Length: 155
Figure 1 (cartoon, helix red, strand yellow):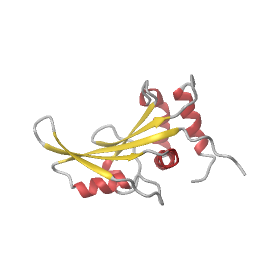
Figure 2 (cartoon, rainbow, N blue to C red):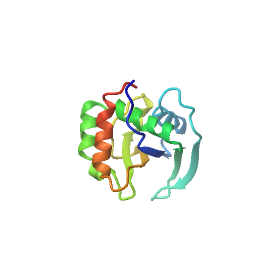
Figure 3 (cartoon, rainbow, N blue to C red):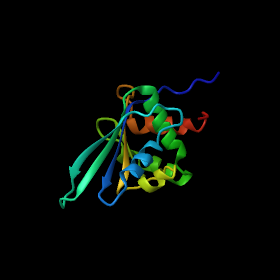
């Protein structure tokens, strides 16, 4: 039996802003579509906010706090990226990991609604994965190796 690499994700936070012109139920569906099949969806919390110009916004937030489901969520999202998006993601890893070892992925809301994972910079669903890496390990290289190893393991 082949052993999978150690789970490197401690927790995941998924956040999406719902603008006044958007249907909140559709944005909720887009967020939930990012979850792997069979996972018990955590509560999706809504917080009412006000935009820069006074327009109403709702922030939808989902937290996955346990390592296995958090790792499964990140792996599910990464595996659904196209080969071009995956290459862009790997190329941009240094900009996607902060000094606190958080990994950020921004995904297209409309594509997520249809069940696809596509990288997007603006008006996106933000996936923030808190990483658990060995002490003094280079986070960029550790995540690169981990993601590249996912291709060897079936979903």
